[in-house]
Image (cartoon, rainbow, N blue to C red; front, side, top):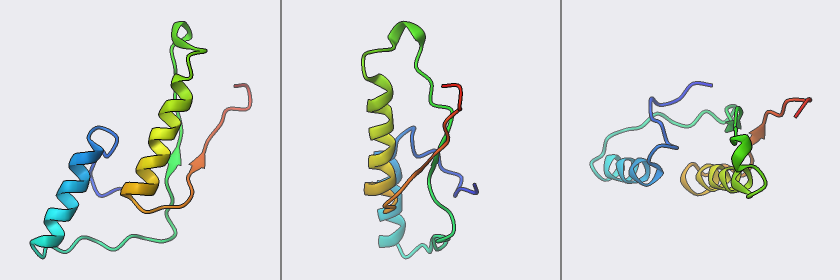
Length: 83
């Protein structure tokens, strides 16, 4: 999926500030392509850390970013059949 060259999961609060600053300064950002949707894949938790709800917390974080920062109401999840 194409992106705007940002890595939002690294610093989502900074991404939000940059977008607000660009809007305030009149810098045009490309319109969102409505055909594209957030997609979560390759989420891993070390075996030694499993059972502590870390994976659930990471998914919730991604959901919040997709909703609160990007304005999406759904996210696609890729799951391995053997998982």
